[in-house]
Length: 165
Picture (cartoon, one colour):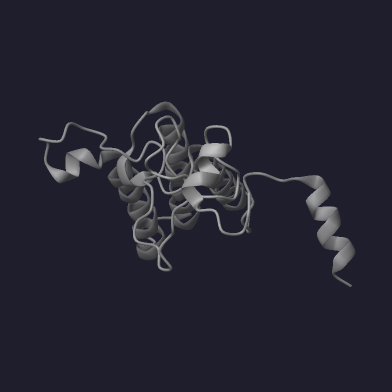
């Protein structure tokens, strides 16, 4: 192979497919087409998360297609309303427990349903861990809220006493 040979002659002398860094001529019979491509400098589109399809058939109205998200948002909104209005004794505790349970429900829905609509934000595993952990932490914090906590964890009390002079 001299310096004056053409790309077509090089491709004919080498086995089918050409070298790893040489382009394959389009006229070759069994040569695979080039697999390199240019990616845009600005992202044009993103892939839908796994399970991000409709939760109901396409001919159903929009709210019915997004019922998992609306369920979680509705329960969270109700919990925030209870906390904000403070209509009864310990409303803060009940409202935050409702918010935590709504997030745990979102984690369960994300696990058991193949398509949850816009409730799918990231991968299924990441959504389940995020919704579940946040829900459990919110419920535990609301149960330990002072005064008169419903849940007392002794080692946490010792940690607080050792950090406060």
